[in-house]
Length: 575
Image (cartoon, rainbow, N blue to C red; front, side):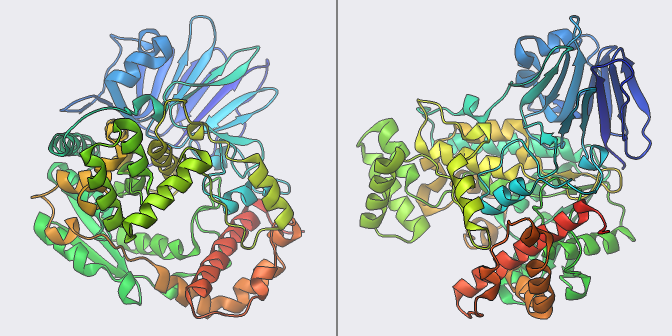
């Protein structure tokens, strides 16, 4: 199912739409506005188009196919109050108002990518960054590459492609002849309830109903779905909610060369309990070309080199199995507030004072973290004394030039969701930081070439509900993501629900490094990151270390190498 869209807003007579990528049908031309799309769309009126998928809020949520009786003006009045309250989905809505302004709203889930390029002649918006820029000299913003490598918290709306920004989920771009501005129409902070009181069974029942409704509504949209499962909680919840509504539903688990990377036991328990088909595919080292850019369609170098084997595996599967959408549990850790620190204790104390329940939360955090009570209390006090306990951006300076790292740290985070309101509890600042990280590079493949990637847990009603649940409830009984676990008791097998430790591709990454060490080191030492002054080569000169420190160094080199390949791709061929 091909997708993608291209919106051009002329601000000067004779302005053209520029690169539209693959030829797309024109679906709206109105004055200075032109929209081309192969994305599903909904024509609301002659001045309003919604690109993507829209559902009326439930339960039951139903896909919307007609909004002509409401019209764009009413739908978007008061900063989209009716749209954001009564509907949800994965969409970008474009509206030309009666006064000539053009509004472009990206929905709060961020499921549909949306990037913006501004120029003197006009503004161009697209779901694929390749529609806004082509590889070439001076195309890469090296400072933003360094910012991304230094911290997952430091990025804002700027991408690593010069003059291309992201329209952040919940934002509306307002374009007039005299002005271009970005307005916040939705933010996670609107849905945090610092003092909301609820019992765990009530919260779990509400979460189960909301997830089943939203994920099921997404499953109705695609004839054949492939879900990546690891045997972890998040993807398992997606499987349980999507499978009953899907026409054809299969699961895929990838396994690596080491026990930690082989999660077939958990994936089999899941699919056997739900009666689903399971594809078990090995991660193949021969799929890896360490000189190739993984996911160059992303405007940030966020994909690991190891994901090249995912791409190759999906290609092999697609030869014999129709796939209309890739589903995943991406974002679940952040949405389900998987916190491993003392901040839930701080939240409960600040919200309720020294009541009996505070001791329960202290015990729960000890069980989640493995720390004793004294350590947790000291950590809570240290956090509160430092900055009220609120989220602090963390920086990883390994392999980053010291002068650039210092400048990035001094500038601090720039994402608007990390601006904390005065009445916020510290744990919710951590919860929202996790949500922000999950929004990065959501698209698996270019929408023009491959089936879309749907991360249904990021659906607006699910996120809003999870934000309203106090942080201390997410660590109840000493289990992370406790409310989500309780919500799916009796549906998912105990082996999944009680699992707290996850495997990962670490063994496969180590195999990549061991086979290609010389090439990786040489490319970084003589590559574009080094030439731009971003790379600190001291990391490459360190002796090999068999301990966990050595593992961290190896992973960092692989991350830097993936960024190097991405930069090389976007910089175009050398002269």
